[in-house]
Length: 195
Image 1 (cartoon, rainbow, N blue to C red):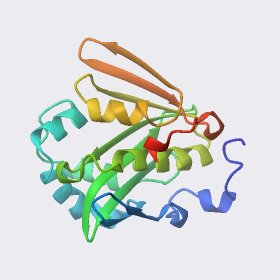
Image 2: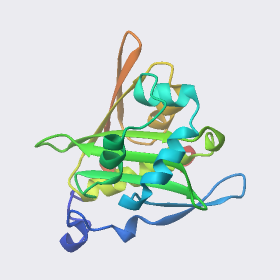
Image 3: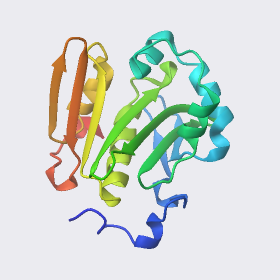
């Protein structure tokens, strides 16, 4: 299977909301959540989501104190082209409880990936679900590798990468960790934990 060979080209037009990325997510608590691509009208929900994150969750995501998203950040995070820049959200009713995204690096087949899960929804497998959905979407759009930067203390995110089933290369320097994953679905090994 090759990238771009898995979807009709008309589904991959920049700016077209990809309905094939909408799914239902059931978690161990019995809750039924919804995973879907982010939309421009999610701006207020994204601000509210960020405001509910703990200091630790914000620090692990942004590497700094970042209590409020700027208007420019909100625009950047919610206005994506769904091809080179894609964000997926997990909803509980009208509230966002998790956000994952990738941004393709210029003129290559690698994208930077990041995700954050609201504290009261952590440890339910949402990070795994987001990474898996982002990888499938990215592969269909010609992206073959993900890269990520995180802190060595971000054990939950590192666990998501290690248990993803994809070949992972992790290097560290001081307090920062660089992660690189090949997201070729044929290289993914069977890993029931990551499901």
